[in-house]
Image (cartoon, rainbow, N blue to C red; front, side, top):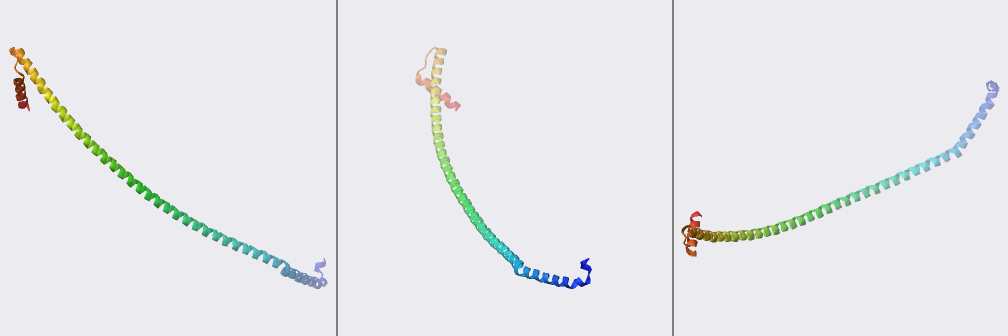
Length: 163
């Protein structure tokens, strides 16, 4: 085996050293700068992406804040409009209620007046009917018809005792 011959060690070590130096120079001058540039580009791209993400996050946060402010303002306006509408409806209901109360009071007074008139008329009719019945009954019982004024006076006297 050629690797085990001690005479070939020196040239092999020399070529190993030469190849190592050539590979080291190639790596140092060619491959490592390319790798460095790729790493720098990647780092720059990551930094730019992070900056853009931060900018978008701040934009989204400001949009969210403005949305929440607009929502709070809209809710406040809605509550105000609701309160105003409720107040208007309450006022209209109170006005209608007052109007209906007035109408009911007026109709009640008119009804009481009509009832009173009907009662007085009924009592007057009862008085007239009672006077006629008394005169007719007296005429049948005793055969003599009393005069109209006497039967009305007797009926009035009888009705005043019952009241």
